[in-house]
Image 1 (cartoon, rainbow, N blue to C red):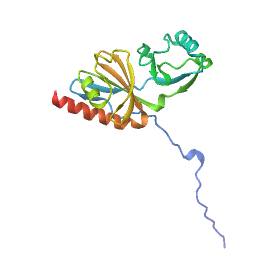
Image 2: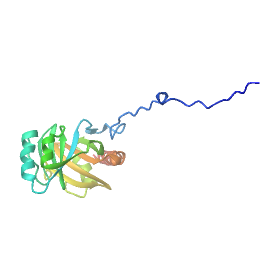
Image 3: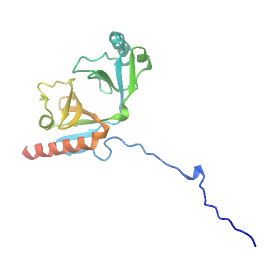
Image 4: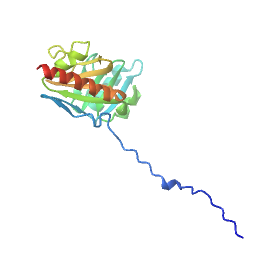
Length: 196
């Protein structure tokens, strides 16, 4: 009599293929359009945190100018242009747009933050009323000039706001708060539009 031994099938490593699909922070949440105001996600930017080494801010600013055509921004301001900007970001600077030149390593600590943030661009006539409704700081367009940057909260979400145009502000928030941020902005926009 023959003895038949059944062994469980053990799949080979190649039998399992796990595909991770990249998703933007606000995938499926934007665009948002209410009245003539829109909110879109800007997802093509590289975001690099630049923290100057002690006593090297001046040299860092010079190298930033050589490498990317902009100097370090002053407090509450941005330098550069669309597609290549440096934003004041509290204790450090955020380079927005281009991949950071490695030559800056001599004068600063560089950290890629691209996957850590969501960047929402708000444009339209209701922008001012929406942000004034949510933020404790004065973001009236007559005082928050083009190029201005402020760190604040929108209700309970920490954000950085950067005014990039006449009726356009970029909102930088933590990636983990993207859904909440889009929800709060949509709710406020709907309320303001209903009163308009």
